[in-house]
Amino acid sequence: MTMARAKRISFSTHLAIVYTLIIAIPLLILILLASEYLNSNLMQSINQEALKTVHDNTVYVTNYINQMERLESVMSSDYELLRTFYFADPKDTEAIIEAMLFHVKALERLQFALPQIYNIHLFAENPAIPERWPLVFRQERLPLQDFPRWSYNYRDPIMSNLEQSKEPSICLTSELLLNKRHVGYLQISMKMRDFLPFAYDAETSEPLPRSANYVFVNKQLISPPDAISDTLQDLLQKQSEQKGTMYTTIHHR
Image 1: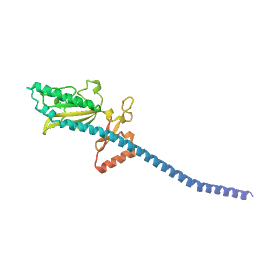
Image 2: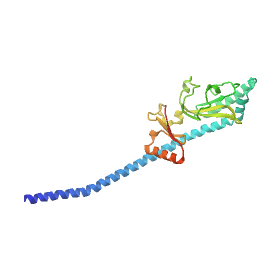
Image 3: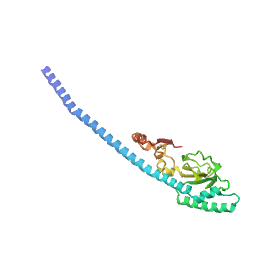
Image 4: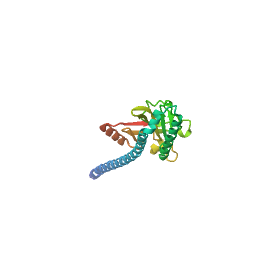
Protein backbone atom coordinates (compact mmCIF):
# COMPACT_ATOMS: atom_id res chain seq x y z
CA MET A 1 0.00 0.00 0.00
CA THR A 2 2.79 2.32 0.85
CA MET A 3 4.51 1.68 -2.47
CA ALA A 4 1.27 2.07 -4.40
CA ARG A 5 0.47 5.26 -2.57
CA ALA A 6 3.96 6.59 -3.20
CA LYS A 7 3.55 5.81 -6.88
CA ARG A 8 0.19 7.58 -6.95
CA ILE A 9 1.73 10.63 -5.24
CA SER A 10 4.70 10.56 -7.58
CA PHE A 11 2.39 10.25 -10.58
CA SER A 12 0.21 13.11 -9.28
CA THR A 13 3.28 15.26 -8.74
CA HIS A 14 4.58 14.57 -12.22
CA LEU A 15 1.16 15.23 -13.68
CA ALA A 16 0.94 18.54 -11.81
CA ILE A 17 4.40 19.53 -13.04
CA VAL A 18 3.50 18.62 -16.63
CA TYR A 19 0.25 20.60 -16.51
CA THR A 20 2.08 23.50 -14.89
CA LEU A 21 4.67 23.50 -17.66
CA ILE A 22 1.99 23.20 -20.32
CA ILE A 23 0.29 26.30 -18.93
CA ALA A 24 3.34 28.23 -17.68
CA ILE A 25 5.54 28.02 -20.77
CA PRO A 26 2.98 29.47 -23.23
CA LEU A 27 1.98 32.02 -20.59
CA LEU A 28 5.62 33.05 -20.12
CA ILE A 29 6.08 33.29 -23.88
CA LEU A 30 2.90 35.36 -24.10
CA ILE A 31 4.12 37.67 -21.33
CA LEU A 32 7.50 38.09 -23.04
CA LEU A 33 5.87 38.81 -26.39
CA ALA A 34 3.45 41.28 -24.82
CA SER A 35 6.31 42.96 -22.97
CA GLU A 36 8.34 43.21 -26.18
CA TYR A 37 5.31 44.58 -28.03
CA LEU A 38 4.66 47.18 -25.34
CA ASN A 39 8.33 48.17 -25.22
CA SER A 40 8.41 48.44 -28.99
CA ASN A 41 5.28 50.60 -29.02
CA LEU A 42 6.65 52.73 -26.19
CA MET A 43 9.96 53.28 -28.00
CA GLN A 44 8.09 54.04 -31.21
CA SER A 45 5.92 56.55 -29.35
CA ILE A 46 8.99 58.14 -27.72
CA ASN A 47 10.80 58.37 -31.06
CA GLN A 48 7.73 59.86 -32.75
CA GLU A 49 7.50 62.46 -29.99
CA ALA A 50 11.23 63.12 -30.32
CA LEU A 51 10.88 63.49 -34.10
CA LYS A 52 8.08 65.99 -33.55
CA THR A 53 10.29 67.90 -31.09
CA VAL A 54 13.14 67.88 -33.59
CA HIS A 55 10.80 69.03 -36.36
CA ASP A 56 9.35 71.86 -34.25
CA ASN A 57 12.83 72.98 -33.19
CA THR A 58 14.04 72.79 -36.78
CA VAL A 59 11.17 74.98 -37.99
CA TYR A 60 11.75 77.48 -35.18
CA VAL A 61 15.52 77.75 -35.70
CA THR A 62 15.31 77.71 -39.50
CA ASN A 63 12.83 80.58 -39.35
CA TYR A 64 15.34 82.75 -37.48
CA ILE A 65 18.21 81.64 -39.72
CA ASN A 66 16.15 82.74 -42.72
CA GLN A 67 15.30 86.06 -41.06
CA MET A 68 18.96 86.79 -40.38
CA GLU A 69 19.92 85.85 -43.93
CA ARG A 70 17.14 88.01 -45.39
CA LEU A 71 18.35 90.95 -43.31
CA GLU A 72 21.86 90.24 -44.57
CA SER A 73 20.58 90.23 -48.15
CA VAL A 74 18.74 93.55 -47.67
CA MET A 75 21.77 95.28 -46.17
CA SER A 76 24.35 93.84 -48.55
CA SER A 77 22.26 95.00 -51.52
CA ASP A 78 21.74 98.55 -50.21
CA TYR A 79 23.58 100.35 -52.99
CA GLU A 80 23.45 103.80 -51.39
CA LEU A 81 24.86 102.51 -48.12
CA LEU A 82 27.67 100.61 -49.84
CA ARG A 83 28.41 103.56 -52.11
CA THR A 84 28.66 105.91 -49.12
CA PHE A 85 31.01 103.55 -47.31
CA TYR A 86 33.23 102.99 -50.33
CA PHE A 87 33.44 106.45 -51.91
CA ALA A 88 33.33 108.67 -48.81
CA ASP A 89 35.94 111.43 -49.16
CA PRO A 90 37.52 112.67 -45.92
CA LYS A 91 37.57 116.18 -47.42
CA ASP A 92 33.77 116.25 -47.69
CA THR A 93 32.97 116.03 -43.99
CA GLU A 94 29.53 117.58 -44.26
CA ALA A 95 28.35 115.10 -46.89
CA ILE A 96 29.70 112.17 -44.86
CA ILE A 97 27.93 113.30 -41.68
CA GLU A 98 24.67 113.86 -43.54
CA ALA A 99 24.85 110.44 -45.21
CA MET A 100 25.80 108.73 -41.95
CA LEU A 101 22.89 110.30 -40.08
CA PHE A 102 20.50 109.07 -42.77
CA HIS A 103 21.86 105.51 -42.87
CA VAL A 104 22.25 105.16 -39.10
CA LYS A 105 18.65 106.25 -38.54
CA ALA A 106 17.52 103.73 -41.15
CA LEU A 107 19.48 100.98 -39.38
CA GLU A 108 18.06 101.97 -36.00
CA ARG A 109 14.52 101.80 -37.37
CA LEU A 110 15.29 98.43 -38.93
CA GLN A 111 16.63 97.02 -35.68
CA PHE A 112 13.67 98.43 -33.76
CA ALA A 113 11.31 96.66 -36.18
CA LEU A 114 13.16 93.37 -35.55
CA PRO A 115 13.37 93.10 -31.75
CA GLN A 116 14.71 89.54 -31.90
CA ILE A 117 17.91 90.88 -33.54
CA TYR A 118 20.47 91.44 -30.80
CA ASN A 119 23.05 93.54 -32.65
CA ILE A 120 23.79 94.87 -36.12
CA HIS A 121 27.40 95.90 -36.71
CA LEU A 122 28.85 97.43 -39.86
CA PHE A 123 32.64 97.51 -40.23
CA ALA A 124 33.87 99.98 -42.85
CA GLU A 125 37.29 99.70 -44.49
CA ASN A 126 37.23 103.36 -45.58
CA PRO A 127 38.94 105.39 -42.79
CA ALA A 128 36.84 108.42 -43.78
CA ILE A 129 33.74 106.74 -42.30
CA PRO A 130 33.31 107.86 -38.67
CA GLU A 131 32.34 105.31 -36.04
CA ARG A 132 28.79 105.51 -34.80
CA TRP A 133 28.26 103.28 -31.80
CA PRO A 134 26.72 100.75 -31.56
CA LEU A 135 26.21 100.30 -35.31
CA VAL A 136 29.17 101.49 -37.38
CA PHE A 137 32.82 100.69 -36.64
CA ARG A 138 36.17 100.74 -38.36
CA GLN A 139 37.20 97.46 -39.90
CA GLU A 140 40.53 97.24 -38.08
CA ARG A 141 38.74 96.75 -34.76
CA LEU A 142 38.26 93.04 -35.49
CA PRO A 143 40.17 90.55 -37.69
CA LEU A 144 37.10 89.56 -39.69
CA GLN A 145 38.74 88.37 -42.90
CA ASP A 146 38.97 84.78 -41.61
CA PHE A 147 35.88 84.91 -39.41
CA PRO A 148 33.41 81.99 -39.83
CA ARG A 149 30.05 82.79 -41.39
CA TRP A 150 28.17 81.41 -38.37
CA SER A 151 29.52 81.73 -34.82
CA TYR A 152 27.78 80.16 -31.84
CA ASN A 153 28.01 81.31 -28.22
CA TYR A 154 29.65 84.45 -29.59
CA ARG A 155 30.45 87.23 -27.12
CA ASP A 156 30.80 90.62 -28.73
CA PRO A 157 34.35 91.88 -27.98
CA ILE A 158 33.54 95.42 -29.11
CA MET A 159 30.62 95.87 -26.73
CA SER A 160 32.13 93.83 -23.90
CA ASN A 161 32.22 96.88 -21.64
CA LEU A 162 28.42 96.90 -21.62
CA GLU A 163 26.87 94.33 -19.27
CA GLN A 164 23.86 93.73 -21.52
CA SER A 165 26.16 92.92 -24.45
CA LYS A 166 28.05 90.11 -22.71
CA GLU A 167 25.32 87.57 -23.34
CA PRO A 168 26.28 84.76 -25.75
CA SER A 169 24.74 85.03 -29.18
CA ILE A 170 24.63 83.44 -32.59
CA CYS A 171 26.43 85.70 -35.04
CA LEU A 172 26.25 85.86 -38.84
CA THR A 173 29.30 87.52 -40.43
CA SER A 174 29.57 88.38 -44.13
CA GLU A 175 31.66 90.54 -46.43
CA LEU A 176 30.15 93.68 -47.95
CA LEU A 177 30.97 94.16 -51.63
CA LEU A 178 30.25 96.89 -54.14
CA ASN A 179 30.63 95.52 -57.67
CA LYS A 180 33.06 92.90 -56.30
CA ARG A 181 35.08 95.58 -54.48
CA HIS A 182 35.58 95.13 -50.75
CA VAL A 183 33.64 97.65 -48.66
CA GLY A 184 33.74 96.08 -45.19
CA TYR A 185 31.93 93.50 -43.11
CA LEU A 186 28.47 92.99 -41.67
CA GLN A 187 27.62 91.21 -38.43
CA ILE A 188 24.08 90.29 -37.39
CA SER A 189 23.59 88.58 -34.04
CA MET A 190 20.78 87.12 -31.99
CA LYS A 191 20.80 86.00 -28.34
CA MET A 192 21.33 82.28 -27.91
CA ARG A 193 18.42 82.06 -25.46
CA ASP A 194 16.12 83.58 -28.10
CA PHE A 195 17.58 81.44 -30.87
CA LEU A 196 17.43 78.24 -28.76
CA PRO A 197 14.67 78.76 -26.17
CA PHE A 198 14.27 75.01 -25.71
CA ALA A 199 17.81 74.85 -24.28
CA TYR A 200 17.16 77.45 -21.58
CA ASP A 201 15.09 77.61 -18.41
CA ALA A 202 11.99 79.71 -19.11
CA GLU A 203 11.99 81.30 -15.64
CA THR A 204 15.69 81.97 -15.03
CA SER A 205 16.88 82.24 -18.67
CA GLU A 206 19.82 80.05 -17.65
CA PRO A 207 21.01 77.14 -19.82
CA LEU A 208 19.39 73.86 -18.85
CA PRO A 209 21.75 71.48 -17.00
CA ARG A 210 21.54 68.83 -19.72
CA SER A 211 21.90 71.16 -22.71
CA ALA A 212 25.66 70.65 -23.00
CA ASN A 213 25.53 69.78 -26.69
CA TYR A 214 23.52 70.78 -29.73
CA VAL A 215 22.80 68.63 -32.77
CA PHE A 216 23.40 70.00 -36.26
CA VAL A 217 22.19 68.42 -39.49
CA ASN A 218 23.31 70.03 -42.73
CA LYS A 219 24.82 72.91 -40.72
CA GLN A 220 21.50 73.67 -39.05
CA LEU A 221 20.97 73.26 -35.33
CA ILE A 222 17.90 71.17 -34.59
CA SER A 223 17.88 70.00 -30.96
CA PRO A 224 19.97 69.22 -27.87
CA PRO A 225 20.98 65.51 -28.13
CA ASP A 226 19.77 64.92 -24.58
CA ALA A 227 16.24 65.77 -25.72
CA ILE A 228 16.20 62.93 -28.24
CA SER A 229 16.89 59.21 -28.03
CA ASP A 230 20.08 57.44 -29.09
CA THR A 231 18.02 55.58 -31.69
CA LEU A 232 16.88 58.85 -33.22
CA GLN A 233 20.41 60.25 -33.20
CA ASP A 234 21.61 57.13 -35.05
CA LEU A 235 18.77 57.58 -37.53
CA LEU A 236 19.70 61.23 -38.13
CA GLN A 237 23.34 60.30 -38.62
CA LYS A 238 22.48 57.55 -41.13
CA GLN A 239 20.14 59.86 -43.05
CA SER A 240 22.84 62.54 -43.10
CA GLU A 241 25.41 60.09 -44.46
CA GLN A 242 23.00 58.84 -47.13
CA LYS A 243 22.12 62.37 -48.25
CA GLY A 244 25.69 63.65 -48.03
CA THR A 245 24.79 66.24 -45.40
CA MET A 246 26.68 67.18 -42.25
CA TYR A 247 25.83 65.75 -38.83
CA THR A 248 27.78 67.14 -35.90
CA THR A 249 27.48 68.59 -32.40
CA ILE A 250 28.92 71.62 -30.62
CA HIS A 251 29.40 72.26 -26.92
CA HIS A 252 27.43 74.81 -24.93
CA ARG A 253 29.92 77.04 -23.10
